[in-house]
Each structure stands twice: as C-alpha cells, then as structure tokens.
Image (cartoon, rainbow, N blue to C red):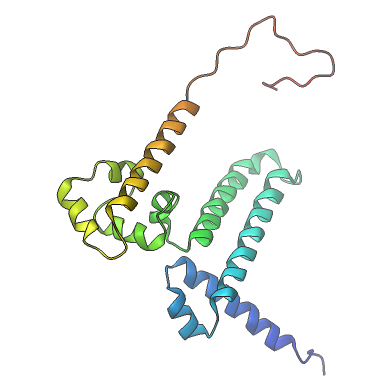
Length: 187
C-alpha cells in the first residue's frame, strides 16, 4: 500500500485544526467550538498559541531572509503587515474591525463587540461616549462603573504614552560622527 495508514487521519486532524482557528478568528464562541468541533477549551488555546508562534516565525523569516530581491520588498512588507493583523486576530479571536478595541486592557472580544454595536470602533470613541450610551452600556451584563473607569484610565494612559513617544528627537549634531568601526544610526 502506497499510503501510510495514519496519513488520512493526520490530514483530517490538520484540516480540523485550521478550521477551528478560522472559526475562532470569526468570533465563534468557545461553547460553539466545543459543540460543533468536539474540542475542549485547552485544545483551542493550544492551537491559538501554536498559530501565534507560526505567524510570528513567518514574519521573522520574511523580514530577515535575504533571498528576496529589493524590488519585492513592497510585497514582502505588505505580507508582513497582513501576517501581523492575522496574528492579532488569532490572539484575540476577533475580526479585524475590533483590533483597536481588544488591545485595550479589560476589553476582550465580547466587550469590544458590544462597544462596536454602540458605534465605537476606536479607543477615542470610548472616551467621547455620551451619558446615554454610557448608561446603556452599564445596563448590559458584565459592565460596571468601576470597570468602565478602569477602561477609561487605560485608554488615557495608552494615548498619553503614544503622544509622548511621538515627540521629536533632537536633531543629531554635525560633530557627532560615528567612531571607526561603529555603525551609524542613520545608515
């Protein structure tokens, strides 16, 4: 026989794993994954973690491998960006439209989807929330005033850090030339 006995089973297992990760990124709940695919939460988290490592490895290979010609760097850069987005989607188990919200501490994919349903897509939208939307949000299960205050604090902290990191660095001096054998920062 030319086909190994366990080959078909291993192939089906790989297909099931890929399907499970895809369903996870499409915001299928753990309970639905358990029921539909007969997997346990630990299996999901193991596959999600493994996929995260594989995507990070693919990005690293693309960025460090010198086999790509200079003319392909635009395509490589776009591919690395797509892999980065996919890595975040796999990590958080959400669609791309929620990525800015799920990166806020205390906001997972469920809370991010609830915020998006109220018209908030970015952290700044959450800060600009009016009282009626805030009351509507606080009326939902899993939301409370303390949690909302923590989310506001986190958003303000991140925005403040982002603003301070964009402050321009002082220009380098003309007499600050690299020493012999030292790499230049601008090269």
